[in-house]
Length: 167
Image 1 (cartoon, helix red, strand yellow):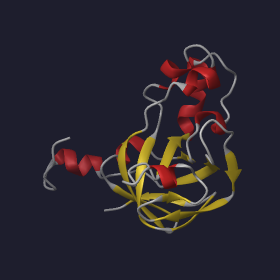
Image 2 (cartoon, rainbow, N blue to C red):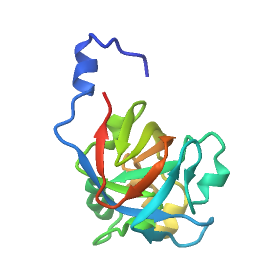
Image 3 (cartoon, rainbow, N blue to C red):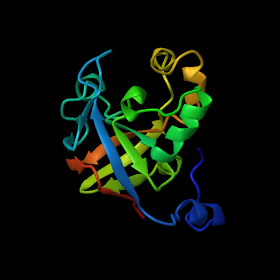
Image 4 (cartoon, rainbow, N blue to C red):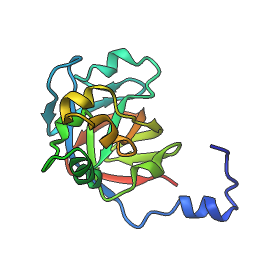
């Protein structure tokens, strides 16, 4: 994405949020192909990831230190995959966040509670979504996979933490 001038109208529009969001769910992936472990709080380590999550050791760049998905997308994924609902653990994202459009955090800094993050890229679905959601699960998640983020300043992430864009 091209860098926008801070004086441009598009920059102004992309910097405005009607409200802050909230963390609704936290989960850790302790290893590949094992169930997610839901937690109420977790230590976020700057430049690394979440304590107890397999990506903390795997991703040395820190670009995938935290994965987030928007709560408002869970019903859409359920409908598109032919399910009544989709428990967050099936989607293998660390945080479920409600009230803010996560796509707007790509390439910008935001804060969750005391933790400062930077959205690095969209979190595209993986082939495991076919097993988790059934045939077509991969396609059901396309465009709804969420966001990957780098941890710039660590701290503790908690359910209920406020999610706010940084100026």
